[in-house]
Image 1 (cartoon, helix red, strand yellow):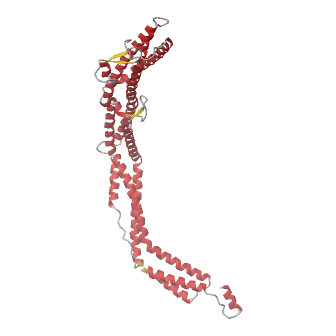
Image 2: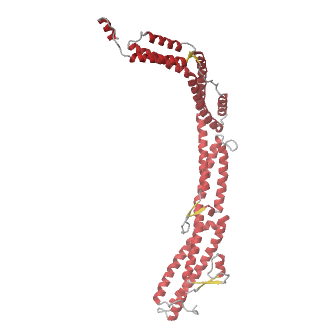
Image 3: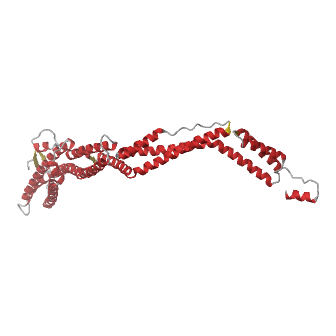
Length: 443
């Protein structure tokens, strides 16, 4: 080691003592870290697991790195021990001792066998297949830090995935089992209901997911962007979260089926009532249509269709499902029927409104005619022959059958116009006695 001479100036005793103290502290810290890595729960799990995929590849490299770490550490320990031995020879080290210590502490004085580095895929400064490598203590510490960080990163990542995902998968699987039992009790089974098929698919996915997580945890690890700290990242729960949402959807579907089982009879009674009201409304519309055709002339009256038989057939099917406790089939059928029944009742009401519209127009015209008659009577014009003639003409049209609404409306308008003209005309009192004038004033 002294053949090439010390690297740089020879260290004095104080520098040597400070360097040995610092190296001793580094040695203690490295040893503590290596022992912690050796006892890490993730490392023990990795040693005993049947690994596959990316985890198998990275663990093979990490194992070699950990082995090399101990090799480096042993070499570091030997070099530090040698330096301490040299320093302890004399209280006041000779120049020869200081030269040797300088070479040992600052020079490339630590030799490690080449195959050990190659086994861990550790790069060598010169490349090639050298039988051994030489390091300075500082370089050796840097190399150990790199190997430790990469090994710890792999161990921490695998342990984080194993700590997070399998337990969550097991909890979800337990919830899945309870949901399957509940689904079976209400007839939600694979091949008979979509929710039953979903439960089977979720079961297969969770089983496969757990096997993959156990054998290849690093396949479910997302490293943190821009983080160089060992274990920086998070478990990838994408598949788990998707299946958890799917199970929640199935549970809501089963809850809907359970709700149907509890209030199926009430819902069927309401459906029968809504469809019955729709039928009665359509019957009333058909009767009204006949009345309109008899009483109103020259009017287009829409045709009233009969009640749809398909709804009654579906209602009978729903009652059959209830009798046979086929709740999973009854649930979607009731929801569909309830929408269709409300639509049918609305259609029936619209038909009645459309059919009776001409009668409503006639009633409005009658009311308008009588209102103007009362108005002219309050102004003392009820006995006016012209108004009486026009009123009688309009009244005959509105109270005769069939009534031509267009002609009747024109007659009402003519009466209104005549009344408006008379009401707007100035009143000139006739020449006569006081009694006549008083009569005019009273009118």
